[in-house]
Length: 422
Image (tube, rainbow, N blue to C red; front, side, top):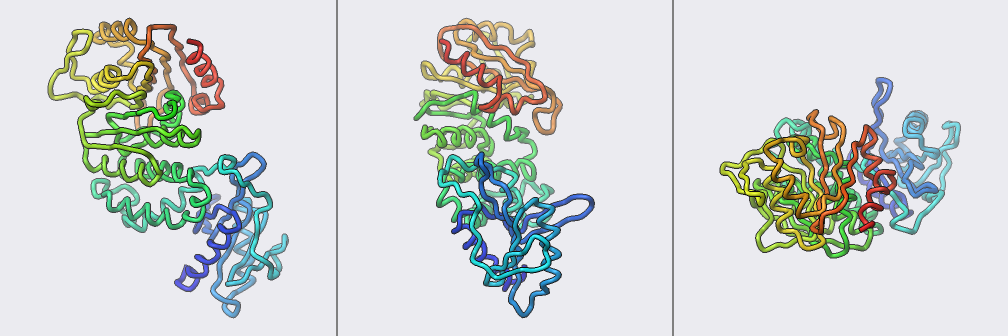
């Protein structure tokens, strides 16, 4: 958009958001060899609460300058591409386009056909957020770094700029739906993992699934001793916030730059947090109710650490799990991601025996290969509770693992029943 059209666009967005739409700006659609970019796509909830495209808006900078025929032709392509049932022109006034896209008639500002006044009824998905977040990353970092060509250059200052742009765009929406700051922060984290922190291989669906398995209770202290940019803490925090069961979030990581980024993302979302630079160990002063972490795959410590079973190890994931389990409050729960080596390595026989004799191994869940981004390793999720030993739920999930770990999945329902059977 030109400067005059951008000012008009700001006004159009304000009016749409005041009416109750979720508004995405400069949204791209790629299909059949063609790339389209709509000025605005306005979303409103359907019967289920899912946000769906309801109208397309093309902004033009004044009645005397509008090529009406060209604008209507553009809108016809955009409406088809984005599956939007209504289309409008905006030049300071609103013009609704007829179904044949041959005429546009001046009208009042549009309103959603359906409107939900319940925050919890509206689902704000990453697909709706990504275009705006990617554009903010592009604006802040430049084209090469937005594509991940120079990840080491990304700083917390850049993140603050990105969050400022994104927060400004979605300010009206988050004023009405404050809990949606969580999915915005999670989508920023997801985009950063793809563009700048590719060594972090945890997809958001897996992080959400691990947060569901943790099933943290109100006011739990939840810790991730190798938190990275805070993905798992964001997922656990959002789950608690949407249940009016806020959590106290603690995280650490040996890399100072990612600690700063995790802190900024959690603060943007509204989390109660304490994120510090430290090795992958739970602080000795903390006795958490919950632990959620994905062990550092293949990492080795410089010195051997003695396990409670009496054996020694330099395996980073084993040391991280030991730190979580040993500090866990009575009745507390850990969800830990690792590799099949933890289940089958003969070197860990004694440690596995120690865990099964002193803790409740709630569940062992094998996921298929490539469930982690960028590696064919098949991850394993282990759920451990600081309680007397009991029956273990063992499962091997297939390609639909993400839906099975969601709250509506058959496996998750069986897991909750197993968890509360004690």
